[in-house]
Each structure stands twice: as C-alpha cells, then as structure tokens.
Length: 211
Image (tube, rainbow, N blue to C red; front, side, top):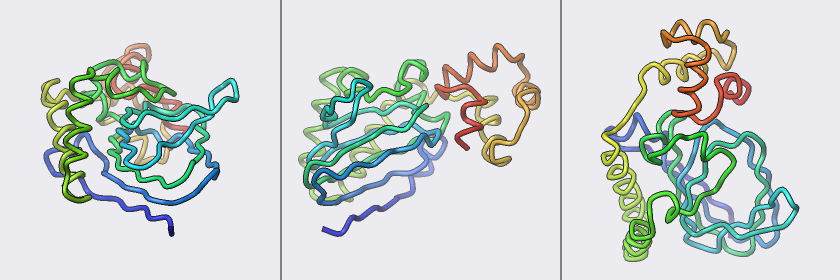
C-alpha cells in the first residue's frame, strides 16, 4: 500500500482549538520513524494496528488504540507492525488545554489512554461510535464532535494572553525576546512560565526553539 497522508480543516467553531484533522494509512512492517516535537498535542485513533513506541528503557510497547499525545520535548521513535490506519486531531498549541481538562504540562512526553484522560465510559462510547461510522468522513465527524463536546464541558476555556504570545512566536519563527512576550501578556516572567505550563505544556523558550 502506498502511504497516504491527508489533512482536513476543522470547523470554524473549533478553529481556536484545533489546527487540523488528519489521516494516515500505510502497510509497513518494522519501519521505524522519529517524530520530532512540533509544539502541538494530538488526539490519536488507531483504526489499524497501533504503532509501537520505544521507551526510555529501549523496550517497544504498543500504543493504546485511543490516546492523547501531549507535547513532545524530545523526538518520539515509533515502529509499525503491519497495516496502520490513523485518524487524528492536531490541536493548536494553546487549544488542547480545553480538551484535556488538566494542566498540559502533566501530559508532556506522555501518550495517555483516552480512558485515563476522560474516563472509561467516554472512551468506550467514542470507540463504539467510531466503529459504527459508515465511512472515513463519518469517522472524522464523530471525532470532531467528541472534541467539541469535551471542549464545551470545560466552557471552551481559552487564555487570550497566552494565545497572543503563541501567535507572536510563530509569526517571528521563534525569534522573540521573553521580555516582549511578558509585555504582550501583561505579566511577569514567572507568571508567564506558569501559564505556559498550564495552557501549552512547555515553556515559551522551548516552544521558540521548536518553532
């Protein structure tokens, strides 16, 4: 199978939280790849055989079928074990906070089973609805609807000041002084660091390096 990667725009109602939806399908056995940090968390659905990831101890472990991938601060090494079919939501840098419902720094470099993040009942319900989807388009709608409901449960929480800082970091390709970000957010350095840890997960300087 020729590898197929596609991106899909999010609904306008989710645009503040979701960068895009994407899908990937391939048939590869044993192929390894290093995933670099990109400043964005993701909701991942393995509709084929889940990837295996290499842990710090060098051992390979299969990923959960439904998982939330927090911010990466170092490359993640994955290995395929046959036909893979992934459907995913890539959040904006400050957008996953409302979906996860917890401080994003708690999720850094972790791939959390969705049942751990939102509870077993929610994970089972989403899995069943995805299984019942008639086609790939219906599955995307199902996944986007789930994200919208979880964001709504947290009152669509946003941090406008941190979003401004994130936009400035991307617009400058990471070449912006911390003092400028503090002025833009209207807070001191320590508070800026705390709010980045809560909303984005990583420090502003770390995001600047990634960008």
